[in-house]
Amino acid sequence: MKNASEITSKLSCARLKITPQRIAVLEAVMELNNHPTAEKVIDFIKANHPNIATGTVYKTLETFVEKGLIKKVKTDRDIMRYDAMTVPHHHLYSSSTDRIEDFIDPELQKMIEKYFNAHKIPNFKIEDIKLQVIGEFLTEKKKVTNKNQQHERKKY
Amino acid sequence: MKNASEITSKLSCARLKITPQRIAVLEAVMELNNHPTAEKVIDFIKANHPNIATGTVYKTLETFVEKGLIKKVKTDRDIMRYDAMTVPHHHLYSSSTDRIEDFIDPELQKMIEKYFNAHKIPNFKIEDIKLQVIGEFLTEKKKVTNKNQQHERKKY
DNA sequence: ATATTAAATAAGAATAAATCCTAATTAAGA
DNA sequence: TCTTAATTAGGATTTATTCTTATTTAATAT
Image (tube, rainbow over all chains, first blue to last red; front, side, top):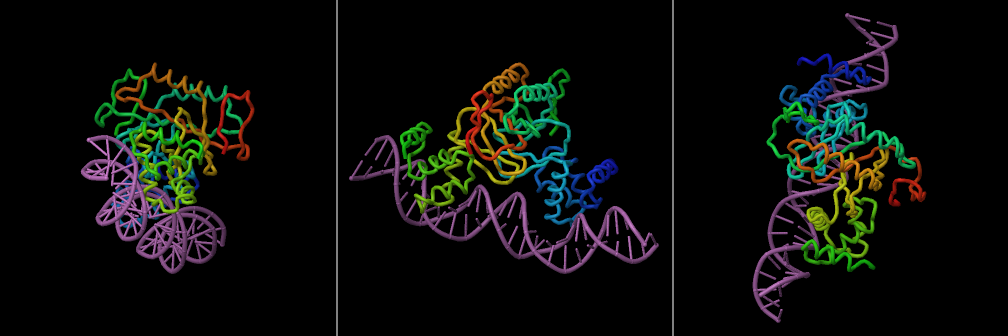
């Protein structure tokens, strides 16, 4: 549990009481870094903390979303997923499987921000912009390592 | 039922058998034009066709999505919504209510397409790009009529 | 260290959306 | 009209999530 202090500091920054349950949930979402479902988080936690209640995990995840510690990831399927990454980023979605990967592209980010600064939407205050790029992954689940490429993807 | 022929032609173009149930569902999604939930569709249909089964509506919606007649709209909440619009467009989401509006912006669309043509994502074939603009609506639910504005929004 | 108290949790019941199942029905082509 | 594969009704079932309440606990003040 190397990043224990990182976790507790995140919790206290968010003005949340530091409880074993919250530590376990935040650790799980950070460890399961590819957008786990609530169920995956629950399974992960059960291994070390067999008696943390299901409802507690759901409630804790919701609390973290409210406090901005994690984000919800929408899919076209019916299960909610969660994301511990806090830097602005988008997502690649497989149209045939449930694979989701992060898509970090500062240049794109900048372009979109610039566009919306120049083209305000009438009567709408933008808080966040998420790009869902839907398509097909052409490789198996492995890290893209080519350093010359424009876009990074986190390993699955 | 003025657009009856439009509906039947859409169905036959999609190589689907033309049934009263399918006509009713497609009509409902087109009529309820602000991204109805399955439940809203069911309620709408029940008025004229009291004995179309719930499961049929779900199945029919799913069939239409597969055939590309309608699209799924996923929200941060847990309910699936549907969209009959077939031209490429994005969505504005209220961060505090469940309001969703269409956001049509051909210039933005063109810019994004151009960007991804110039910056291919390695090992990924793009099929669709959806922009989720999350924020707050500053007006009540009414149509934006200013013709000079860049962005159109369908009325709620 | 201890007491206080508001916040958090366990446990499982309850809810709600969506799916599944099977027999009966129906649309479209022969 | 007949045939047949596709579709539907009806309802049970599943699954994700929320809710409820008594109990426990973390943080603060004493």
